[in-house]
Image (cartoon, rainbow, N blue to C red; front, side):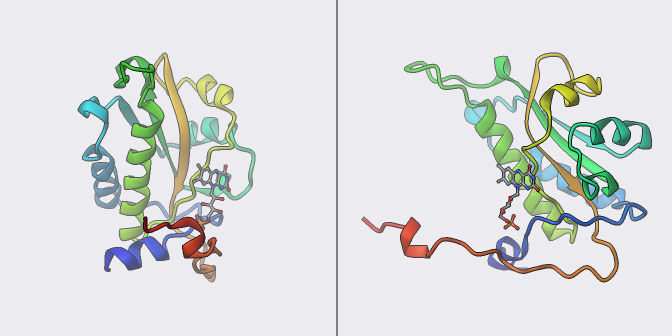
Length: 172
Ligand SMILES: Cc1cc2nc3c(=O)[nH]c(=O)nc-3n(C[C@H](O)[C@H](O)[C@H](O)COP(=O)(O)O)c2cc1C
């Protein structure tokens, strides 16, 4: 698959076959894509939680109340500690959210290359996620994603409408 195919074929999938786990080799390659992602000053202020046990999935499901999310066989949580992230001395900008976002995007694209579906989720309840007890103290989470395969017969929709190219691009 070319890189262009990869980025245009990826789409948010809200349909998962609860019975079909992703094999460990694919999961490892997906996690490796986050592991090699760049981060400000190479601080790597992150932790990647791959949730697959029934007990922990049941806990994580409480933080995002959507039936389709509750059917995903795995959930990936990208967490990190603000104290470990690089800060810009001039204005105190902290790179935690940027670093975690890059790592998540690397893993979402790696999942696509493995034929594994994802859906970026930011609308989860962070308090409920903390209450699961899965995260370390002081970790923040900006996004989670299910990992899995759609149910049989599900058809991808294709690239969702984007603003016109020249509305968002300026060659200056
Ligand atoms: C930062 C961010 C947060 C998102 N949060 C959610 C979410 O909470 N729930 C959801 O169903 N989709 C969520 N999405 C998915 C977007 O709706 C989706 O990426 C967008 O509509 C474009 O569609 P596509 O991913 O299929 O190309 C989020 C995407 C991003 C980038």
